[in-house]
Length: 373
Ligand SMILES: *Cc1c(COP(=O)(O)O)cnc(C)c1O
Image (cartoon, rainbow, N blue to C red):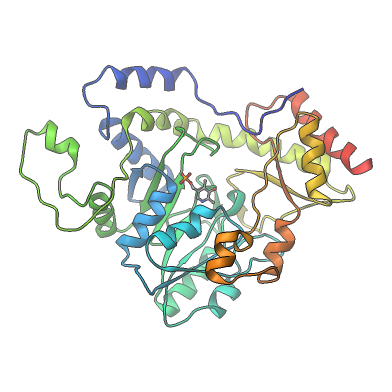
């Protein structure tokens, strides 16, 4: 038995779209991207979406567009993928990591407030594994201290908390369509925002800073254009973005299948000595992006499961323990005890709609076997 960590859901409609784009004249950012942006905004109930080349690019552009620069501090979590904090460094600012809540693994609003200084300009919460952070509390803190909020929503398109969706209480939310995310085109990302001025700025920044994008330059005949600010090359090609709309149309159906897989795993694994789960807070609908258990002897479990053909991943080794962050920011073991305790036990197991009953049973039995041998 070989159980992949992830299998995508690209099907006949996506393949047909790709053929259509390849047969068209203009294969970079054009109609397919715009159609997706509109549909994504409608799904999230947010006014504007701009598709870009990755979530990392989206986070970086939001920081720039919101005026975050050298000397500024941005508060985020150590329990995330490096892209989150790297984007802050790309913008010239300093990532200030603060510890997570022990039960959920999400950034702790109390720790955010404790670590605000005169230099703090923004908060970058991460909706880990699909579970939204406490956005109401984070919004209150941001209002009190006049801070921006940029959500790293790479794990969370379908999630809600206290009736709020990503992009609704922040300045902007950033999404990923990387190869293992809930909807994917291999590489891609998006920013959603309710702020039309921010959306306009992001639109200019994602294509060099020039005031007309390539599409309207060519389709509407040549027009002179100007560049007033320095932007980046972060647009996405229609060859990729055309894969997203069909998946977005199935997003709730895919979510339901992960939701029942989540229930199956919880039912089958809870109460077993040596395993624990992160909490999902009340009034929260997880996007069910990853299924991550906390397991004793985690590194031995990785070996054991991989030897049986069950692919696993670690989300995450807390980033303050990585060489670059230790060296440049002086973090050490012990800096963030909650993130470290969780990070030493996390193990993500195969979790996607295409897993069949035999496979999911094999995953559960393998974990049980590991814990009893
Ligand atoms: C995947 C991921 C990113 C980066 O997404 P890209 O589209 O690959 O740039 C950022 N943050 C988190 C939490 C992620 O899981």
